[in-house]
Length: 126
Image 1 (tube, rainbow, N blue to C red):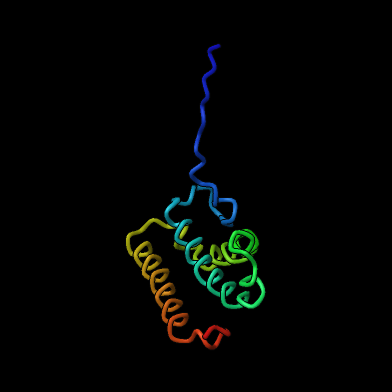
Image 2: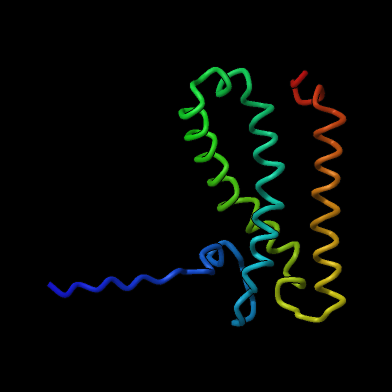
């Protein structure tokens, strides 16, 4: 038997979440940053809001349900919304626009980090 497996990795798997007006491919790292920007607050909010319900389930069941909810929110709402918000950054490759986009993503993540660290009680977490 001479069986040979050939697999390929689809490195642009999140592209389908991004609404583009131009045919050029979006760099994978930019899409990954948008997914990260969508995931952190959605996972944190789900953790806070679901602590009294999902938090009571065994960890594997909790993670299964939480991941399902987060992927749906990310794929159907947050990343498409962020792709419209960051459309100029996703489609342009100038150094200035690239730097502004990176800085704004990092700044938003820092703001979320501060909010979730300082005000956990506002979301029901003590």
